[in-house]
Amino acid sequence: MPATTSISCTTTWEAVGLATLTALGPDAPPALHTLHWDLAKHPELYGTFDGGDRVRVNGVSAAQLTRAPRALREHSVGHVHLSTPLAVDAHRRPPAVKGDYAVVLGRITPGKGQDLGARVARRVGVPLVLAGPVGPYHRPVDLAAAGAEARRNPDVRFFLDRVAPHVDGDLVRWVGTVAGRERDDLVAGARAALFPLRWAEPGGTAVVESLALGTPVVSTARGCLPELVDHGRTGLLTADEDELADLLLAASLLDETECRREAADRFIPATMARRYLALYERVRLPATTPRLQAA
Image 1 (tube, rainbow, N blue to C red):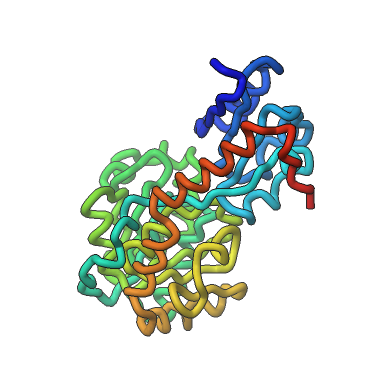
Image 2: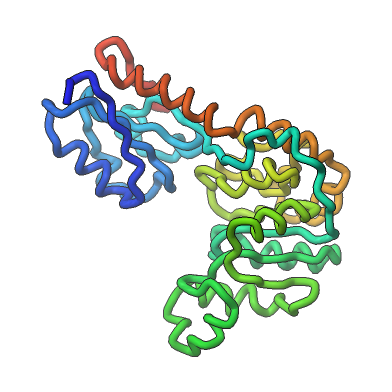
């Protein structure tokens, strides 16, 4: 392989991918490794990382990279926001018929804050659909069949102790994992996509999907959310969890066409590809490309 060839590694093995690329040695081609997760993880590896001028990293948001240890940030060449095929020609998609419900899409876990979302929905009387797995269980019937053994999983304990008491099958429903057309219809028909986050969301796949489907985002202003959502136009953000209830009611005043237009402009795969090509060029020419200054 020519020395000027760049390779991209987006492995979900997290630490393994970065360590493997580094272990290839100085004669290997330049490498760009995409970091998708919380960069406060793996502090021993990230805190001492040295890829020289050969191994560089990029993030999926600026906010994500700020959480990285200094050694890792010094190897960063920037970030590329995630894209979704749903955003292609989203501005030309006919408006969806909106229901009166909100949706929380994603794995049910403390950082995603589904318990907070359920309390907010009950406070203002907005029906809420929780869509996502609980630990390894993708359907309510699967979790019910697992019995007491399921409590060994921390996400199951979180759901049973903090979320399930609010799930009544009417105002708050858990429908399990949804995908494909079922997911798209569920999100497109919602008055808002609620993200009651308690952690610094690094990438926000569900956020860009919601915008592409014409559904405004209501969220705590954590992680990448302020980078993805234009407050007052494509969504409503707050640093105060108590304000989420009012924002959920106000979300119906936002224009879904603005959400789809923003997605079509910023979150299509072609935009992401162009950004990656620019990063690959920087990685290909390390001698002329200074590293980003660590914050």
